[in-house]
Image 1: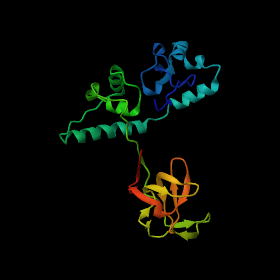
Image 2 (image 1 turned 45 degrees about the horizontal axis):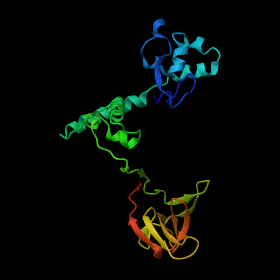
Image 3 (image 1 turned 180 degrees about the horizontal axis):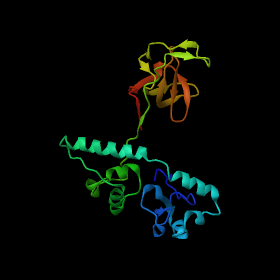
Length: 236
């Protein structure tokens, strides 16, 4: 799926049921090797039938050349992931904890049989044997966590020639706040009067930049109250 971009190799159809097609038909001596397999939507698979690829795409030489080049692309990344995940599974089993594995097909079967809609968090609940009987409600929501990092390590600003033009201060906080803190701002007057929630970027003066879901504006730290310290992650 990753190798062929999750779309039909012959017509670029996406979000449609895809089948595995033998580029060189097995009836003509083709093998089941990965280099001879591609993705095709059902109509294209039927139209191609057991015709050679050169005959089927005689009218589209650019696509023919692209498929011939793409079919030979190595799958080193997939091999590394497969090796890593089984090593991880084996290590976790040694802890004695209840660990299980499952396939995408099993996950979909569990979800469809229980009548749940397609969503990432629902799929996560329906994975494996333990996912065949889960109780989910429409009011439930997943917690989205995004890695934000902890800022830059570079302490010196350089120009395009590589010469220093400025230095960052060694202090990372001011007035009890640091960049990335989640805060609530209670602004009493002006254009942005009201209560706002967002992340703050400090300046070493009483004028911080507050980024909310709708806007970015300056705010005095006296109007801010801390909700959560910056820990490298954003939670939603």
